[in-house]
Image (cartoon, rainbow, N blue to C red; front, side):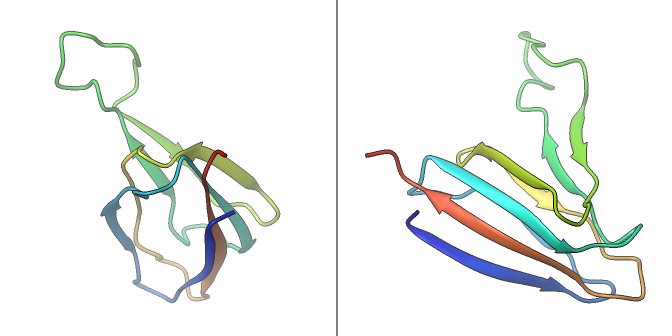
Length: 98
């Protein structure tokens, strides 16, 4: 692991479109999450290409307490707005292959 941090997204907070440069694998672990507290979204990188490898426009992961997801660090993603009345709390980590 090269770094890790905590995300606390209060009501109406969200995370901008980004990726995790300088690492190989990233992960998110939801500590606290309620319905409508903001989804993790991976846009289909091929949606505007002749190579339609995925049929979905976006892959959406609903937050669930205790759920852990790993993904390639270079994969662009964002978190939708927290529309609930409670904060969504997650832990994020970046890993580098040795």
